[in-house]
Length: 133
Image (cartoon, rainbow, N blue to C red; front, side, top):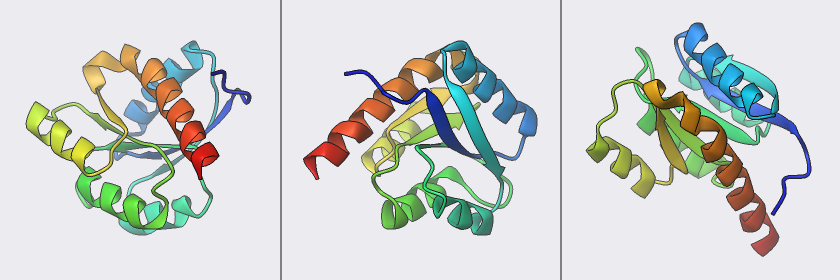
């Protein structure tokens, strides 16, 4: 299945703007035209969900708000939007727990080359989910 639209509307929950830019750059290398917004707090995250991004990238550990909380909020407000955990320090147990709670996938920050394929698959799965509904 091909994704028709090349522009990717991305919501990034991240406390380090440089990490967000690296992720966006990696997606651009994969051929995406990325329109993105960066949020850092729970309030900003909730507001940004109203903009209906196509994919959400979430840093697992933030000073004021964490990836697990973001995942739970997304599950209530917009479960159809794929959410990918992005972390520099997530262990396999935490990653599995996130997947059980509804995360689409996870990518370690030192393996950003995986991000493009993960996002493509997440978009395809979201498309199938919408068609089934």
